Length: 176
Image 1: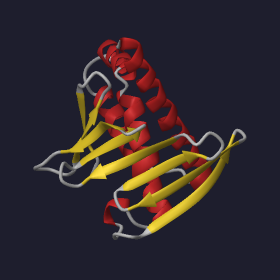
Image 2 (image 1 turned 135 degrees about the vertical axis):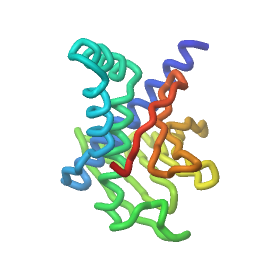
Image 3 (image 1 turned 90 degrees about the horizontal axis):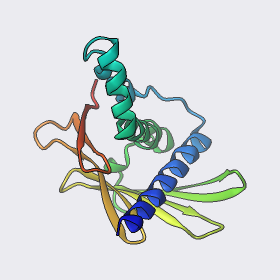
Image 4 (image 1 turned 90 degrees about the vertical axis):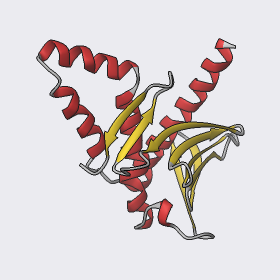
């Protein structure tokens, strides 16, 4: 069971990394990375250099920095560059597709309302990033299995809780 879970996590991490690299290849943009900066600033203001260093190691292991970076790169910085609009605001039926080549592999990335689909054109492997408006949550979907990776606060949509693989939450204010 544990090997199966580790294999699933490895697949998800691989697809996330592909999405990140594809995002850079597709857009050629450099964003503000506000979410990652906020996490870094929060970490830097916890205490003395020892506390800050220990907490940074913990946040790297958890992987809060990786998740914050992914949300910045794959969602916050890239979405508006591609479409001029956030996919959550796209209308039903609207669709934008981009083709990317990275390390000899070709990918098709399709943005529709509340969804990004990434497909490796050589292997046929697919993964999706989905937004569920009812639960205000982002999910990664592979092989028909959805894993919640982030959720907005019900009372304050500026707060995004990043859901770590161990189930613990890292809350980030995306408005700052």
